[in-house]
Image 1 (tube, rainbow, N blue to C red):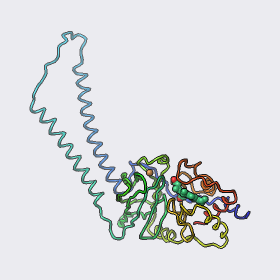
Image 2: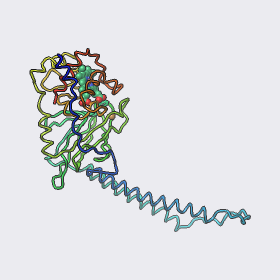
Image 3: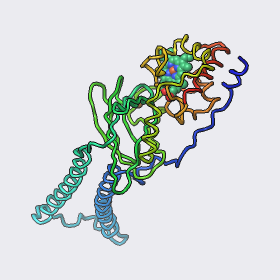
Image 4: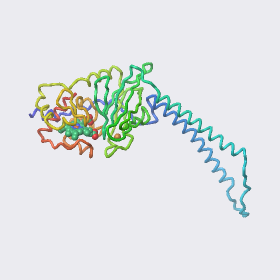
Length: 336
Ligand SMILES: [Cu+2]
């Protein structure tokens, strides 16, 4: 018993956070984000030039034709009506500019939307929940949450990952600024999106459509890694939970609580689908969709009362006894 308590208190080592990327649209690191960034720049340059020209003319006119001190005639300057040249110019030039902007934008939208996945591509389904992300890899038999592992795209080996976006409740939106523009996750509708991160590392994102109280704490990580690391990760995730004899009692406690109605731990009685799959909980960097780092102390605090860290979230405060808490946390820490 004491040993279990000690185990529960043992800090699980903070998972090594690889390169930590910033959520910055000006530093795209995948094809969709890159082409969207380029049309954004292009439109900005054109509209910027229009702004400078119009503002410049206005300022020039204000200065050039201002009222002078020695001018007391109070007369309007001569007015010009119906100049065909001027009217043609201010109709035709803006129309041309609008067509160029439409054309360039349509080309990029089509190239991002119509890209068809090669057979070897990794496909996953991302399902929005208030306020966390369910991640399924049907081809790999893997279900996880809040952290999306994908293979990195190296020159030559283009390994884009295709995401099918769904929602079980309200509209959410996938946004990892360095990888792609936003795409909504809409109930009863499948949306698609692809990403091909060029550098390994952790890309940060978040829900970009207001979806309720804890919308701001619906964070998302894309972990891009070498193909072989990705395959190894997927193979690990596919395994059911370890059946270690030593943790029999802790596991029995967990299985006796209502956790099992909301959470799945593959290979145990826990088969709930309402909350995140916990089979390999300890392989994740964060808890509660990014609100807490996944450390022993934070895990204990979360299980003790998730409403402290994420008020309003749909995991109730479980009111466990100290003994139950020790055992449940000890058990969760074996879910590597
Ligand atoms: Cu959301």
